[in-house]
Length: 298
Image (spheres, rainbow, N blue to C red):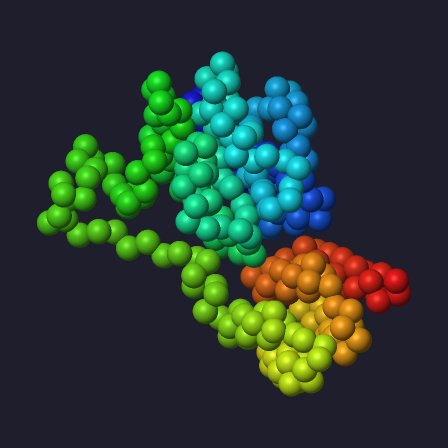
């Protein structure tokens, strides 16, 4: 069977991806984004047991696993176990970790567990495609020794460099290849900037201070204006639902930080998805609306 770390062109139609995510909604969203990239051979698992069963039943080319604080699925533990399995092909599979809690320490821990690449939520199709190209077309060399098993942990070489001299000191006089971070570029768009302002305003909400609610309402107006200008109906509907929740609960001091965090994450995800991803975008907006209606009715 072909070595999964052998560099090859990314061919979406023939790529087999396993999505491991404890959250049904998040797992479905990742699958929708993959389908938008023309990847249709998608398997799903919600925990380590399901993932192991899937890997045993069918050939998989790469694993996309999600982790957030509080998840029962131990993503890094699963990756460490995968790197130590006796099946040589399985332990060499590329692994991409998806999380909204991507920190420097998480990157270090993930790298030491054997993760190939990292992807921060909200997921943009461009950033996901970039990571897929990195693990399929220019995978990291695989290290198998007494103290570490997994992709090479050196992360400063340009992805297109295949020479023998890989240290910075060996290549001091060589021009470095430019690398564009799709996530950083997406975060600079007007709607993502406006949503960042909304997040800051919502984090400061205090039912005892009317000015904090006024500041949040101003941010809502800015975001809704941008949604209208770009004909983003799903984002506008989601903003309206969240605005209603804030308007009702904050003056009473009954706002739920978990609901607010979830809503902000959903809005940021909508802003990252192109308008062409209709099914995925509608499902996000509808799920948020239903969740907020349920909270307001409680």
